Image (cartoon, rainbow, N blue to C red; front, side, top):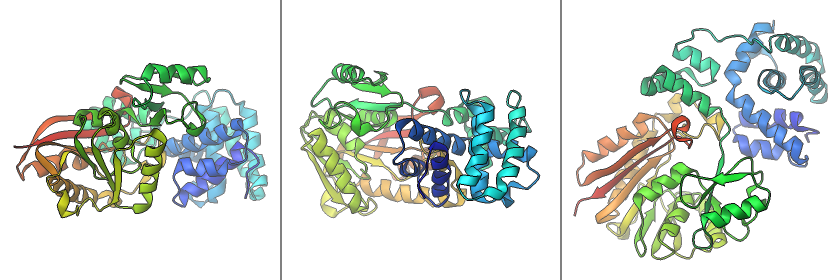
Amino acid sequence: MRAENGRAAAVLALAAVRRGSFSQEAAEAAARGLDEREAALCARLVYGTLQNEAYLDFCLGKFCSTPLKKLEPRVLDILRISALQLLFFDRIPPRSAVAEGVELCRALGSPRAAGLVNAVLRRVSEVRDSPPEAPGKGTAGYLSVRYSHPLWLAEEFVSARGYEGAERLMAANNSEPAVYLQANTLKISGEELLARLQEGGVKARPGRLDGEAMAERPGDIRRLPGYAGGLFYVQDEAARTAVEAAAPRRGERVLDACAAPGGKSFAAAMLMGGEGRILACDIQAKKLARIEEGARRLGIGIIETRAMDARRPAAELEGAFDVVIADVPCSGLGVIRKKPEIRYKPRAELAALPQIQMEILRAVSRCVAAGGRLLYSTCTLLEEENGGVVRAFLKDGGFTVRQERTLWPDTDGTDGFYLCLMERSQ
């Protein structure tokens, strides 16, 4: 089914997310063929609905006589995107949000639900200025509903940050992040890149790192000035910070053990001034083509790729690298701002991750030369995947921690990220 406007596209995209698609891919696919304005509306509705799903359901449940779980999934999605407009969007008139919700029922094949949708949305519009308050304020349960995080995750954040810190973090998880564009310093300086972007009409400002520009709602990255010429690549400030902590130097040998999509290898190459050797590996061979394509666009000639299970590096790699980067597979709960659907992963699915992470860390540590550096990093905020893994690894001996840091979306303005730089004894 092809969507006629941004609202219809959002409903189709949310159905795709339920089937397992990532939100960005689903929104882009559903909005294909729409003009820029409608495509942008689709994206805002998809991300906003996923970010606020529990709270939207709480509000809708106050006014819907039928239990939400018994509604047709498509009808519930129509209610959610319409309630989102009523409760979170300032520029859409309430009457329009209600009418469009009713029309979506007819247009998307659920005309019998139009009356229910009309009645519920009218009630929601009446409380727009004083929406229902989630119960239990001051508890993790309140935060779970108000900021639409699973209760177990809200409890984790309260344990790690305290109630107020957890609330700030969860609010930041529901915010719209800037896009970090890292200058390809092999070709252009950060100042020159920023000027080029601004001259091209991109809303961008300097980032906190050298050569970094922060762009607001840049749209299709491939259409930005300088992309085709390889003048920049996209990488969050947190990931760039981790590579800078490892400080790869000119002429050094670097192993990026879990490299896809390639950002850390690209950052390392630039810090090395394009001199040395980088072996970028990934367990999925098909992902290596993306790294190779990015390296060609950026004009980086020191990156080699290899399909490899990081838990089983080849014998000839042992002791062969000055820097080993282990950005391991993780729960991804630090990038909720960009992938809001990640928060809904069942906790049971995450239980096996620390064991996998430990296996990778132990295996690739053998590839570090005497006196070399080992960087362990994740894009999650769960202690059992971060410091818990590192502390267990350090019991094996042979490595000393040189830097350990957690970056938080609310205090650092970056992805949620953990890094630990270790040095191998001589």
